[in-house]
Amino acid sequence: MSDEAEARRERHQLTIRSAQGLAWGNKAGQGFNTTDVPLEFCLLQGEMAEAFDAWRKGRADVAEELADVAIYLLSLAEMLGIDLQDAVQAKLVKNAARTYEPLPNGTLVKPACPESGADGE
Image: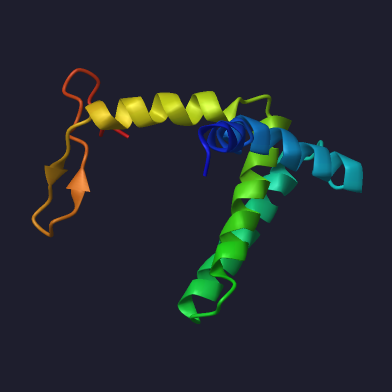
């Protein structure tokens, strides 16, 4: 691939932000729910259940089901006025700086916050 073709391809790569806009545009354009936040959370949960079921049963459509989850999540973020790209980037930075402690069963957990008495969640 030429340098020019590679540069063109990179300019057209999907970002979280552009995917959020595309998902919202399709949702609004097709006449789907754009205002009922509790319903959207429930529908997102249903899509997660479908993805899990596809994975559990070894079906070939796991990727498509996960894409549905992503599309519902992107649309919900738009509905709530959240720039999911910024939120994900900030959360990745925060997570990278965290430390975890293993429980006796090997599960990693955030250490308890001594100042607040909170469990770190």
